[in-house]
Every structure is written in structure tokens, then in C-alpha cells.
Image (cartoon, rainbow, N blue to C red; front, side, top):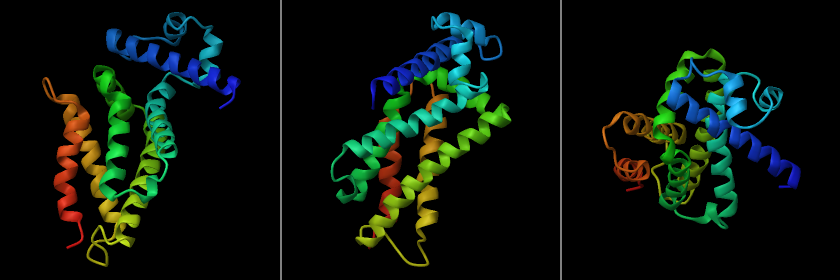
Length: 200
């Protein structure tokens, strides 16, 4: 990444994190674009260079998660040669690390995403990207004989089950009082799911 691209990413990240803090403190509806820009120490016009609307900040969370995941996968030499368990572990650990410290803000973001048609539509594109990553892992696992295969265990269904386990664990983590770390919850649930997916 060049210097210009890095600076742009840093500014987008600062605006995003500033917005999350304000959403947590004041609520989403009560926070204005002007307040986000002022708190991030940028001009209002600069905000719109990165986010077309306030709602776009909500969907940035999903895009950010996928960027972190692709960077982690690219930085792990031999990722595709690792066992299915190791590949899923990297995926879930990366996703959990990206939001672990933002639990309260993620509660606000998750609620508002479902209230905003544009943010929901944009977020589903990130979810689709995650599904494709999971599907690739499942298919590699089937080809190597690590996971069940055949008409009784289609890769698409298995990837959807893994994805559902991720999102339901995420939402449970948001709502629990004093929950364990998200990564620990994901490991526990995925390990149970993987037992049923393994090739006999």
C-alpha cells in the first residue's frame, strides 16, 4: 500500500472510530455528520469524501471486517494448505479481533443496519464475501477428505451453517451480560459444528 492509500485508510478509520464513539455515547439518531467531522478534526466535506451518508458508516464495519480478513489470509503463507480447522480458526479469530473492543458500538451498529435500507443492502455484500471465503474453505476440505462430501453434504449448505453459527454467536455475544471473549465463543460453537461436518 502506497503512502497516499495508507493516509486515506487512516482517515477513514479515524472517522469510523470517532463515529462509533459518538454513536455509543449519544445514540445514532442524535449524532450528526457535523459532530463526527468536528470530533475527528476534519472538515465536513472530508467526511463526505469517505462516506456518502451517515448510514454509510454503518456498512463500513462490514467492509472493514472483510478487509482485515483478506489481509490476514494473504499474510498467512500457505493458508490454503492448512487444515480446515486452522483455516476457520484464522477466519474467526480475525473477525473477532476486529470487533472485540467495540461491543457497545456494535450493538448500535447492528440495530441501525436493520433500520437502514441502504446500509443493510451494503452490509449484505460484505456478508456475501464472507460466505464465499467460507465456501472455498469447505470445498478445499471436501476435496482433501477432511469434510463430508456428496449430495448429502453440499458445500453450499455447510458454508451457510458455518456462517449462521458465526452471526448467531455474534448476536448472542452482543446481548449477553459479561460475555466471554467473542473468539472463545466462536471456537466453542464451531468445534461442535465441525464434529458433524467431518468426514467419517
